[in-house]
Length: 464
Ligand SMILES: Nc1nc2c(ncn2[C@@H]2O[C@H](COP(=O)(O)OP(=O)(O)OP(=O)(O)O)[C@@H](O)[C@H]2O)c(=O)[nH]1
Ligand SMILES: [Mg+2]
Image (cartoon, rainbow, N blue to C red; front, side, top):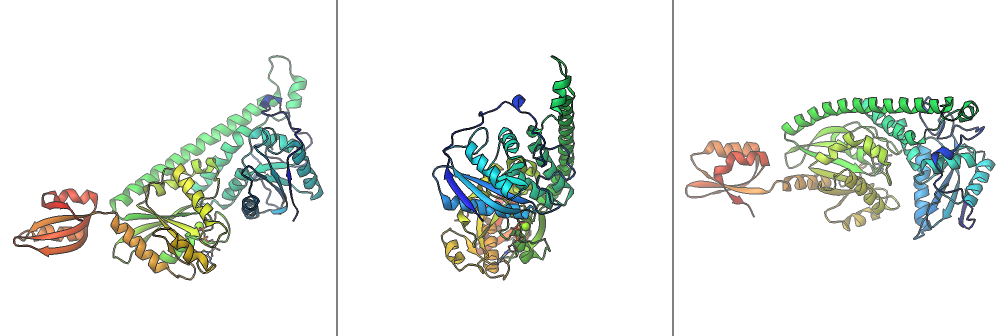
């Protein structure tokens, strides 16, 4: 693989911030392009009827860090591979800030074009978020599809979605991505036919496309609202069951589904590819301390998860907001586990789940010796291998302990003639100690907040 890296010195750029109205349709493109006709059969950006050849472009902004850039491009390559295509060349550039018109400088864009031609590649992927104008200009210059990180991730999600809700969420995210990128088709015709104040057929078509797309967005949103109402009913039922809820979160491919399977025989799909899980699965888990909890496996996160997806997956991600404890699974054998932890925490912050208590679980300890050592640097973290089962019982004990500590113990004085109350406390909470007094029994117990009120008259204080 060729890796070229150069400082941008050309300084010749397309006019920055080109107005939409100035953009004309790319002419005689052999390739579909991200601005291709709305409603392409699969909705995918990368064609999967064959393995596309792809040139990947990464830009390093100050403070420059080649190693980090390469790590990001390695990840981009995995994403492209998961999306069903092959990377044939990487091109990198250092730039103080992205070029407004083409993201990279004009000279670099020309280099990308030559590379694309020499490899006869189908698509160029930029490891960044491109604006619609940048993307349009690039496609025009390159003469082939130019897409960004978001489009690749959307493609993978689309490929992996299986449930009705998952599919609707992904399609909604795709349409929201496409909406600002719609272009009038047949604009040339409209110019031929047009006079001042007339609306050419090209523009009409654009309006029609836009309306169709907006209508479809509304329909999907309504459909998702219905699914969500149903989910709310389920959630209420779950709350009534008063079981604590533990939710597994983590970077994609960290081993979340493997852990759920290892703990509950859930039989969830485990695959060595990114975003294998899009739908959450919940199972009951009996903890060693005696109590049972609900355990949910969720969609994986990734660095710079497209906001359209976070938005569209809001209802799926809501389970993390409701959780009593997040089990944050980290691939301890990955190149940079800390960056992955941060990426996951970024998404948790975005959805407001950063207040939920978190337990860090460093997985894949069987693959790298340093995983145990690494875990020790994080307070309360554990190291496991979800494949061999090593350390899993310790992790369970910690989960159990963390769940128990969610309920602060309280002290109660129960007269001896109220054996019914003592029995009720045993039924509704966890009794930590019973100390007999002269006229009453002193009971230290952990009770659900909703249960405490029932025993108000016997409460003598919070236990130390
Ligand atoms: N060596 C090793 N491999 C593991 C371990 N846990 C998971 N894997 C492998 O890692 C890959 C991803 O595992 P999954 O359980 O699908 O990961 P996930 O976090 O659910 O991934 P997504 O659903 O794609 O976000 C699979 O190939 C697993 O077999 C482990 O402890 N050790
Ligand atoms: Mg999974």
